[in-house]
Image (cartoon, rainbow, N blue to C red; front, top):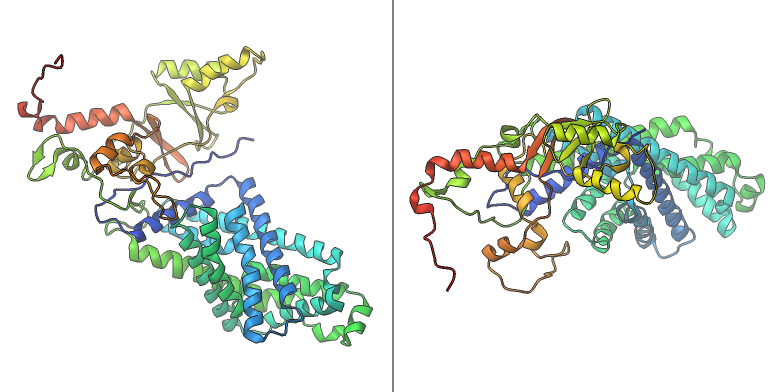
Length: 502
């Protein structure tokens, strides 16, 4: 079965000259959330299982460093918090879908990038994947007999930690969940400002260490810790308790029903409020552009500096190009006429359809008309090279299509899309994700614009909530601009003729 394409690179709405760091972080959060909600289900679930394993590994680390520690209450908890931060570091750097950070996809829902159903399905899928990962680790830890370490004190530490989590009142557990995910999501939010793995890892350590050492409640961590306590209470042999001089009845309250109603439900709700509402919705309300509203794509600037647009003619102190594009969106220019094929069509059919529509590119859609990729004339010509080595007449569109596709939203600012298709932002602003200058040449902004040509496609699928609505063609953008600015072009616009033979 063909999976959804990796359609995560979405262009922003109109960039303004007063772009701020907050707007840039909001854009990154928007892309982060929509990427999670539109990710292929199998990949998303698999990465969620990994995230559950990572958090469980972190709790094993926490129990190990805190067992038998005599450095003092606060210092011991700090040691445990720093150890537990390994979990979120693994999620951020190694890749994982963690429920408590996935709730930040609320930003994409508020911006209209994803539907309510996509949001709920994503959250449910990730939560179940995390549960599978944590329970897998519970089984491995029990089989490995880790609870017997340090003459059973490791297991006793696990039992008392799990039991403590069941003794909060409902509102206390909820509040601790809010505080926990406020810190987790603030840590993730900070990683949006950097690109390199080391910076991301360092940024999440202190927020995680703080929430763990302060006793805040993390729903996915509890999916490992409390079931581990229940497993030890029910499965540990009698000599385990005899060696410790305690009775297993001391932990009789470690039951599934107590865990579900006294901890998991209120903590999970608190995690959603702390991450999706306080961080996600809070920053969206503060930093959204004035014209943003639910159901429309929230504008996202492309740069942190004003982009100097070239002019054709002056119109009351405003460049003609800027005047023409001031209120135009992709919807105003996009075409609804294009070649369209399915992944299971033959390359011959794709070639004929492209020729009939005079297209160099065909959109590849599934049975629900969702965009899953594109196939170009170059992809088909590449097939001719393949048959030189292996004669395979059964090659289909799926075998040769591209799945890593740049696409735009119908509400995107046309000017921002033009900037992206013509200017390579990394070349225009040669700064690494850590803020380190990578090019020390002192070129003017105009020269940098001239030299920062972008290697982008001529066609962009126009997609809203997974549905293909049309295409944006570079030649149609040029035709549109020409038709709008033509009345303002006067003879003085033409450059004087020069003798170039000198």
